[in-house]
Image (cartoon, rainbow, N blue to C red):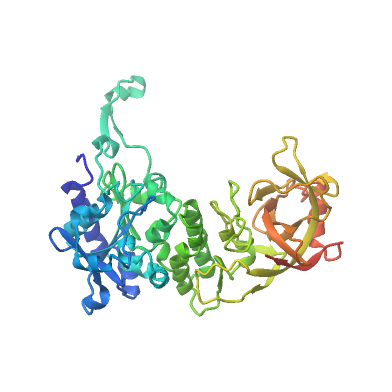
Length: 524
């Protein structure tokens, strides 16, 4: 039981996991064989004694070395950075002792595993060159997917926190105690105590997970070794383990909330719900991604573009299009994304209000039911296509045909959250607002707020109806912006009623001859 994650015992664990992954994991082998091999434009050569050297891949080819990647928190300064002025210096070589501690530890682990090359974003991409950034950022999916191993510095808030950490053995190893309680003869038993928490608890709450960029690094890498404050955790497409469970007897059998690195493995093409399975992968990644934060909000779509490219490659044939973070397949349902905690929409958002990319906050999408009936239909998105998957198009608009119902809003008794009224009476529904409180004015006109019906879930006993809260922009006739998402449930399934007010509301959305009824609107 070592007192540091730098120990030889820890290294032996990592080497055994690598050995099994290379030779015994069928899914991992299939994933490696299916990818095309690309070298990053630049790599760090770590084979020298006390130096690291920047090397251009065009001078390494045709030799194609295996390399490691580093996922880390940049912190306020970002540590050592490659700039145009320092380019020649990096090529000549950098003294190892001048590197931030996290980088030194990554170099040390790369050498101990027996590899000569390492990729660190801040040291391999020219940070003050817009041209270099534009060329490198779209290739993030290739860089991490092509890595031999990804090193995740989970417990460090910046590049000086290091990868290796000191720890108490009791923080990651089980211990045995003898019970002295006489009931049920427990005084004769030896009980094993395991440290609290499993993989997604400790990995999902580490400092690195606050960095949105790290999500695609984790999901695209073929395998990642997470260096936490108290232990090391292994994650690949076939296997999960840790130092306290080297054989994965417990880690690989827990009901995890996501499949981790299985994300990049395409569903079987002959699977009846193949398209839906691909879309659910996106929903899963989106929730993880929006849980983190970005130093530059302009990176909102760039930092997830690698995942978008992988998913687009799964949808062969080019029939599914991508618009500002949204996919054309089942787009109507995807419009019903929501935030549990109200988000924040900037004064000048990078994306239209109907896209999750317009909100700063953690985003969720309701699980796509196998049986549903759409009330609305997206007619077109303008502009219709873009070759740049991460381009932010704030001016995109969506034309949608659907039932629109006017409602009024008034403060509740606490004056915090609004109540929506239909026909002068309160409408009982689950309301999830994008930004917390709807703008309520003293002289609110009756048609200022509208509920747009999107779909009815035919699987649910309560037959929930789901849709969007929208408001007129006042700029153009028929133009609206999204304000939130709503769900109304059948409160009385035995007599198929939504309540008196809810029933009247549902009828208004299903009717084509109401005062508003089905119409075509523009969502900006």
